Image 1 (cartoon, helix red, strand yellow):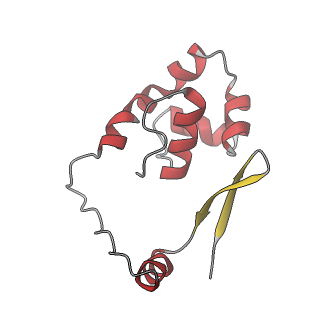
Image 2: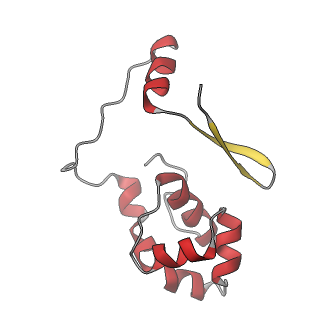
Length: 112
């Protein structure tokens, strides 16, 4: 298995694995496989809750966080966070959840 472990404060928090391997694990556990989201699907409740991340720079500055501090806490580079803030890059779900958690945005616990 090709698994990536994401840690917070030195403790494992997430395990990321390829979709096919995830599907195999679900099948082995006897669980239904979730459908793949279609590109035209309406945003989930979590995506709606995380929309304030569109104003990421304002949220960060309102909390008095330097870009370097927030980036380090989330586990990304300050330059990548700058690209996210400017809208040039879209972070993956794990980074969105981490940013939402650090900035106190509702919906950070849900799947996205």
